[in-house]
Length: 176
Image (cartoon, rainbow, N blue to C red; front, top):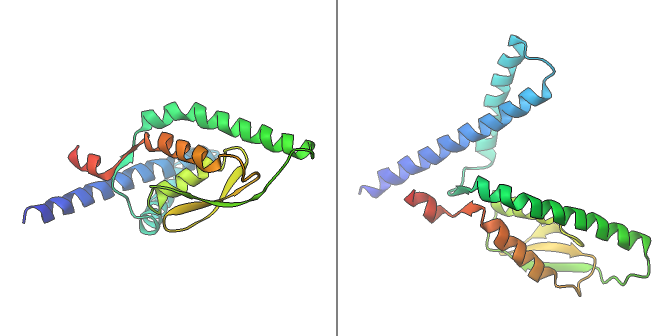
């Protein structure tokens, strides 16, 4: 009996935390984009932030779990380096037509459920050399690869494990 009110409080708390963090991000974006800090601009920014936050919460329900910001920041150099390698790889393939290609699609099973986490992972892996996410199934992301003979799935699974380090799963989050 006491678990239902507790779950309701946890959901309300998660919802409030998501609303606050999204509102802070939207308002920060507004401040960056505005050329001035006139009172009318700030008031309009607050109203716009409130509307954007409401729309965001309605379109993308807050999920259990949260990010480990420090872990994600520590992964940033890795993903930036992968982005540089991706650019060099594509440029190399564009300027050297002798390089063998075997383009095609492949499915990479992922442990992330559909939603924000999976979409974020797909966006990050779009920076990897030679592959780009282009769809999904209930259990996998679909990638277009420049060379299907390469160990694309193995590389994507390594990236999934790295990305997962920056996440706190729902069961850990509930214990905090």
